[in-house]
Every structure is written in structure tokens, then in C-alpha cells.
Amino acid sequence: MVTAVTALAVFLALAFRPAALEVDVAAVQRGPLQETLEQEGKTRMHDNFVLASPVAGRLKRIEIHAGDPVKSGQIIATIDPVPLEPQQRAALEARLSTTQELQREATARLQRAEADNSQANTDLERATKLAAQGVIARDALEKAQTAAKAASKELDAALYKSKAAAFQVEEAKAALLAVAQGPAGIKPVYLRSPVPGRVLRLIEQSERVVASGAPVVSIGYTPRLEIIADFLTTDAVKISAGMPAVIGDWGGTNPIPARVRLVEPSAFTKISALGVEEQRVYVVLDFLSTPQQLGDAYRVEVRVITWQSPGVLKVPLSALFRRGDDWNVFIAAQGRANRRTVKIGHRSDLEAEALDGLREGEEVIVHPSNELKDSSRIQKRKPASQ
Image (cartoon, rainbow, N blue to C red; front, side, top):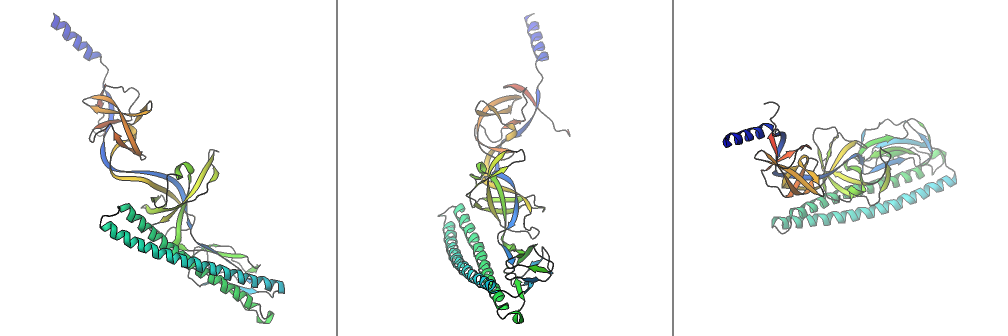
């Protein structure tokens, strides 16, 4: 009789107990993890040169168009000067003096860039030898390589700026010479490209009379294409020069590697789409390889890698939930959901670094419902195809 009653009680308990909850699980595993900051950005030419008319005169129609490539020294525009008054001639002489001062400044900057480039190459050679001997870490070698590349690019920019300054001096001399002998001795003045690059914008294209100093065409030095993105200041404090980055959503099939060159020291106020005032700061990045399809002011997506590791213990973010001030997960084991407090570190968009409380290979429940409690009976959900 007692046995029958016990059996009936067991049967009733089994019959009326709550059904097992179906859950999705994922394994805790080791693998690479990156912590990133993302923001929309755009490309821009690091060096823009605006060619202006050195004299007042009639500008002849310009035959090139925006986007056309130009060579260093190529004639862009021709201007027939008008006779000048003495005071206008004095202004041209003053302009010549100013361009000569700018040329001396550009020459000094070029000499400094040459010295910096030489020092960066010396530091790179030393770091390469020390890294081969295991004296310094790989990060130190990568920083030396980045510094050498940056110094080389700065040297190129300084070289072309020096050439541009020399062109400006020649233009000022030509403008002064063109009107030195009065109407009978007037000669055309030519505007030449100071660098190899691409025409960004034609400010004046049709034939017309232009004033002295009127801008005519803007030329970009294409080898120095860079990216600029404005980040919230609370995010920008996590970014520093030399950090790797990835440029995506630019129209091509593959993301483009880049590196942070500068976090500008001054922030600015920007009104968000929701009408909220935000403090933002510009972050400037260099392409490590520049695709030919990109030009000035193209939209891109910038993803700065602020931290990364090739092998950490990872848990899906969808498995984590808060209980008080602590992070928790449900462990799926032997048909039960067991709640466990865990400690997490760095996070990506989908995963988090598990610092304590989890072991590799354990299964955690992802997207746990409100019905799930500690020790709840569970059943792993089968794939839809089964």
C-alpha cells in the first residue's frame, strides 16, 4: 500500500511539474578579440594648393576639368595682364617679397623634415636589430616602423611645399616682369601646378577679367590622402596616435588598413540629429594603402582598434545580464540552468573577455528569458532544419 501511494505521488509530481524551457546555448571558447570605436568619417587631401592670379587681367578659358590629373609644372591657366599703376606695381613687389619669405620658411621646414626622417630611419634600424635579439617587444618595433613611415610622408609633403613656394616666387617674378615695361612689353602670365596631383575644383573656368589675388583652381596632392572623423570626447580619450584602424563601407569589397596619426587637442560643439549638444574632437588617420578609386571628401566608416588580443576566453554578450552590480550568466549543465556570477573585461560588439567565473568549453544560455530561474529545467532548442 505504501509503495503504491509513493508511486502515485511520484507520478503526480512528474505529471504536473513545469515543462523544461527551450533555450539556445553557446560555448565559452578562446579566440581573438578586439575592442573598437566606430564613427563615420570622410577623406581629405592633406595638402591642398589654391592657385590664384598674381595680376589683374583677362583669364583665358581653362581647358582642364575637376578630377583631371596634373603634373608638377603643368600650365593650368593663362592670364593676359592689364597695365598697372605705380601703387599696383608696388603691391606686386611686396607680394614677391612675401613669397620669398615663405620660400625660406618652406626650405627650413624641408631641412627639419630631412633631419627627422634620417633620425626615424636610424631608430628603425636600431629597433629592428633589438627586436631580432629579443631585447624589445614587437610593439616597440611597430611604433618605430610607424614613425619612420610618418617621417617619410612628412618629408614628401615638405618637399612639395618647398617646390610650391618656389613656384609662387616664380609667379610673382613673372607678374612683375610682365608689366615692367608698360603696355608694349606686357607678356602673358602662366599659372602652373606646384605638385603632381588632381584638380579638386575649378573656381574660375570661363574666360573673364579677374582681379589680382583671385583664386582660380584648387589642386590636391593625391599621395597624401587622409581620413578625418569626429569622435565624442569621451571616446577620443581612449584613442592615441599609432593605434591601428580599419576603413570600411567605402564602396570597395575589402576593408582598408589605416593608422591613427593625430587626435586634435581642441574639441568643438556639435548638435546631434536629436538636437543634443555634443563635445566632439577630430581624429586624423593615414591610409596604409590608398585605393585609386577614393578622392577628396569621400564618405567612409572608421573603426579604431583601441585594444586587441589574439587569444582570450570569450563569452557572448547576449549571455550576460545584470544582477545588482554584478554580471551573471546561466550555465547549461545536466538539463539545468545554473546562475553564476562572472567578471568580464574588454568587450566587442558581440563578445566579452571572461576574466573570472567561466571555463573553456562550458555552455552558456544566450538570450535568457525572464522565465528562466536558477536550477530551472532546460532543453536545448534544436536547429530549425531538424
